[in-house]
Image (cartoon, rainbow, N blue to C red):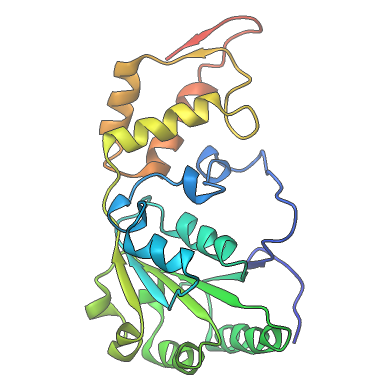
Length: 240
């Protein structure tokens, strides 16, 4: 059955829109692989995941690592790179019926040669029955499953699902990675603070990066609080 687009599913062929009420971290999600920062050990030039994407040979995968390290952002880019329909479920609030419906919709899309990337955040929260529902879709290639988890998948996800997936372990972002993201947000006039007069001290950005513990969301949230709580009067420069 065909479902209307909503907050859980989207077509990446629709024109991108920017929700200026959304947090800075959401607005600054990378739009291309070239904008993606971090995880060079598997998405860097010549590394495994980038090679699979370039060859259009992507299998189901599981992203495992700490929060704020780019799992959701990379899942969306994978769908965009493969020109697939992107559907997103959060395991914390999804039931078996929703998983079955997503698989049914993927089967419908396949009749018109449209592929589906099904991204399941917090996949470790699915119980065994919910995970088992995914297996036929993964085995038949009906969906490209991208599961994201902060828990070790070898202990939190069914072994049958793990054995059919490639696992990529995410590392906390380095301070250098975070500073790149912070400076990008300060310069971006469309999604960030580029239309404001802001001078950011190197030491201040380094301090913000260091206390964010490798979490890009935390770093960008900290920058947003610093800017919005100190917004200068018109014509003045904000010094961070």
